[in-house]
Length: 255
Image 1 (cartoon, rainbow, N blue to C red):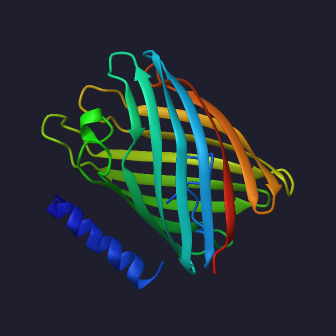
Image 2 (cartoon, rainbow, N blue to C red):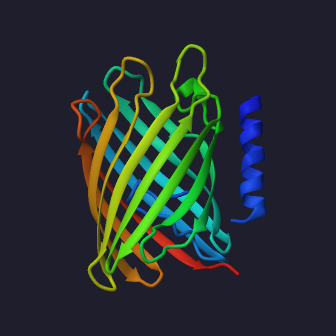
């Protein structure tokens, strides 16, 4: 049963998308301000494999996202992934996690000195099996402010977010702040380099804040199909000792 808070945020979501128009471009976690073009559909398919410092492994396959450009400066989308984890100290987990519904609106175009600015709302819908440890059984809302500035072949993306966690009483999950910076460098018409730093505040009291980095490449296989690959790790003693990801992004005109 949806909480009152979720209903309020769905109303906000409606007015955001209804009065005008979030997914990071693979392989980045950090999002950029420009949305998918009007009438364009962007499909993402990926795989990630990580080895936590505490031991065990976690694999996500498939990682899927669909994003559609509804109008100028406005996109909507959904994403979901399947996890297969065997973490030390936790029971094994296997199956699809919760579905995410999102929208992004680019409310300020890039100027000579000012960056492009966008705002996104991501609502996690509790569709996964809580008894298998795949969901909290509650809806979360993530609010994100995005800034993007280009300098010739280089683009910088800055994110600042706030996750409102609807926690089950026994888990005592905290609301979380997040921030991150990404760099995208277009080497030529086919090759690009990407890198990012991002972090989040602790999930529960007593845990450590998270900080991670990732570097990778993007390659235009054939317009409009893009291949990506990246590796990264945690910058703190807890977290991921190493993570690798690869995937494909296909963007085309739906109408």
